[in-house]
Length: 170
Ligand code: GDP
Image (tube, rainbow, N blue to C red; front, side, top):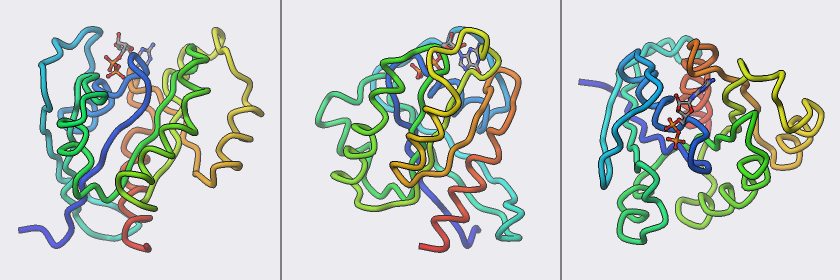
């Protein structure tokens, strides 16, 4: 029985690593290609959060790129207490789409705990956006920035710990 439960939605353009991030965090695995199921996949993970000195139950939904369908959208966002807005180091469109993902979260869920995630930092030599531009985007949107490599498990746990902490403060 957990005192703390938090539903986290992971958003961002296709291919930025949302499914990979959810699998990595919940199951501790990474593979290059996941077989994406139609509909919404549910995963959960209990994780001790240092900042709260408490175990938190994270509940995550993976939409497998079906977010554009209204029926799924509603199930997906309902009750979400926090959100990851992710983009990829190597995909400029995914970076440009960040403000619209934030607007979407606010429209569906209100001002919940959110952060900005730049994934695939292992591919930094192929970056299509500068560090300064990324920091400017985070500042402008008022979001804390995490740079992650889901592939090598860098900063993934930190993202979820931060969201639990921010959610607790709100
Ligand atoms: P989604 O469409 O946002 O759910 O993205 P996926 O999780 O399906 O990932 C898209 C592709 O990016 C897959 O081939 C992943 O293996 C790959 N990927 C995810 N995270 C990383 C990362 O940190 N580094 C690298 N190099 N590839 C990644």
